[in-house]
Length: 251
Ligand code: ARG
Image 1 (cartoon, protein in one colour):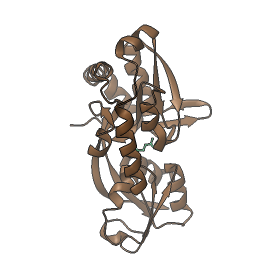
Image 2 (cartoon, protein in one colour; image 1 turned 180 degrees about the horizontal axis):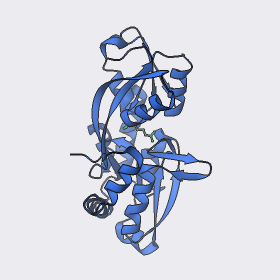
Image 3 (spheres, rainbow, N blue to C red; image 1 turned 120 degrees about the vertical axis):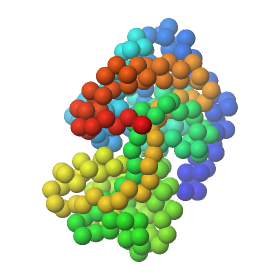
Image 4 (tube, rainbow, N blue to C red; image 1 turned 180 degrees about the vertical axis):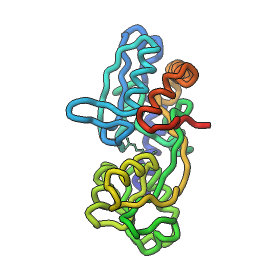
């Protein structure tokens, strides 16, 4: 937590000095640079050599609407917002929950989906926040899962992993008692593990947004307009249906 706080403070400082590309510059170049992690299925994931997932398809759709080509950048989750401030790309779409802490360092778009952090354990394991007492829990580093798990009293140990998929693997291998992660990811995981894992309670709800460099109002406006269009013309609903069998927009 200390490290996470420090990083965000440093980010807030950087935010006042870096210079992002304005909407006019992006438009003129014809290509928008978008960053994601590529290791967070089904939202952003590299399959074989292809970057895919709900957020990747959605961002490609938004860029198409804006008349832009896309250049994708993938890097570790906990360095994504830092790279934004270093002007390495124009925006980030990587399932970032919109939190007051992060909003000090970056500006968020309107939410592009709503979800929550859920507990998953091996069958017979902890299912509620109260059950986590005395247990070890795996989470991805730098996430809202870590932040929220820290608030649950009595947990024996929180183990952090650079990648969410590694946190899941720790649960499957029996090295931790529970995993806390995205509720949709959790559902997929439980299904794929056929009876070995069980879904527990939701710990918290969150709205997920795209992040632009603080103050990049022009780009934010265009992204929000493209998202609004996608939400209203059926393209968002179609994509969401493909990935989740349901519409994951915020209501
Ligand atoms: N929604 C969580 C958060 O805001 C997790 C995001 C993780 N994203 C990823 N690409 N691994 O922290």
